[in-house]
Amino acid sequence: MSKYKNKRLHVSAFDFVFSVIFFGLLIGSAFFWAERQETKGKFNIEQTKVDFIIEAPSPEQVTEIDARSDVDRVVPYVYRSADIKGNKKTVNSSLYIIESSDDLDYTVFSNSLKIKETTSTANNPLYISSDLAKSAGLSLNDTFNITLSESTIEFAISGIYKSDYRNVGGTAIAIMKNDVKALCGEKYNYNGAYVCSNDVNSTQSYIEKYVGMGDVRSADEFDNDDAYQQYLENRKNKNSTESTIYISSFIKELEKRYNSKLYRDLIISVAFVIGAVFFLIIDLCGKPNRYSKNDVEKDIRNNFTLEQEKQMYRRYNSSGFFLYIVAVCVSIAVSYFVLGNDLISMNNITALVSTVIFSIIARVSTSSKLNKQFSIVSEKIKKESEGR
Image (cartoon, rainbow, N blue to C red; front, side, top):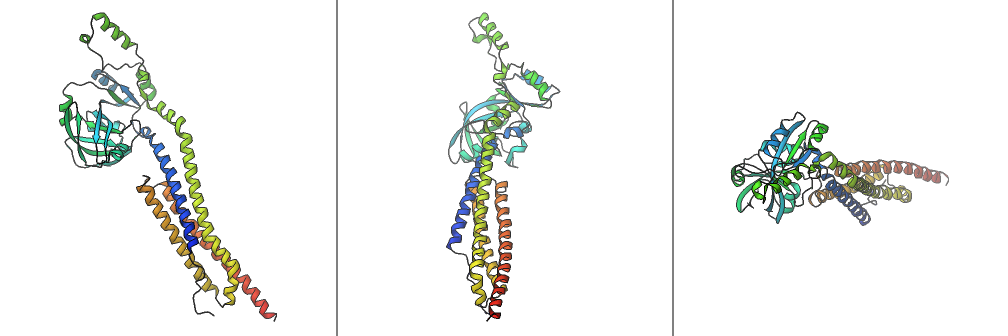
């Protein structure tokens, strides 16, 4: 019996080529998963409590809507376009000013979409969407100045939320207090309002007849009373549905536009993972199986035992398993840091679990074939010896 371990089956350059292909397929899967997640982000508004976004309500209309039994909360806002200067670049963003931080959960920045929030209290807190944070290069607690109506206000990032991608440049929400309150003054007009309903059909019946009065022009802006009366009459006949966002209808439109892309990206991402697993199986099963078929007889004639063969197979499978696990871990790092996927995602979990499971299957399968081949060849050699 040989006193040396059998080391003829080992990880070679050929195995490294397979692991690189395996890694490339996982990166391809991660890319299409990132595409899918970005598309799914367009549906984020569905996770909020907002059912309608109406245009220009007056204070009286806000009170009227809020008093309705079918409405849980109405959150009016003042809108401004703002240049937000981050560490990367300056981004022109949509800034919404609401009257209380208690109302934040009833806007497009629902708690369900919260990514990060600071525990410290800022003088002028600003809550921003993730796409704005990424493009401008802003992080939690960062401070910067925004110029509004020729007044400069220092804001601090107090929260970052998942974006619904409706606004080019991202979304920011400020609170009507301190410097922001001083800027807007005691009297200001609402540009719109978020409406959260507990009976969407009843609220929609009201909204369809709603005409915002918060932007009504005063009589002194017209040349005569007749022109002013004509203006008021035209406003009564205004179709508010054109300026109102119905969230349910908005989601249905998104589904028509993006469902096929979501499905396609999912299928492609899964297909890449399956392809990666296929290469893993070919490598970890193919090479040992070829060895069993072509070289086991040589090893037996060289006095190697079954246990020594098993040790060699275990070393090979362990080395191959380590190689592929490293490839999975690197692909997850690239997926997270480069492509922006979540660290713990279905895609990453599938890749990792599949690699572990099929590596185990490969190990059991090749070990079983080795046992069978070793038994067959040993019996063959024994008969040859007896026939001499």
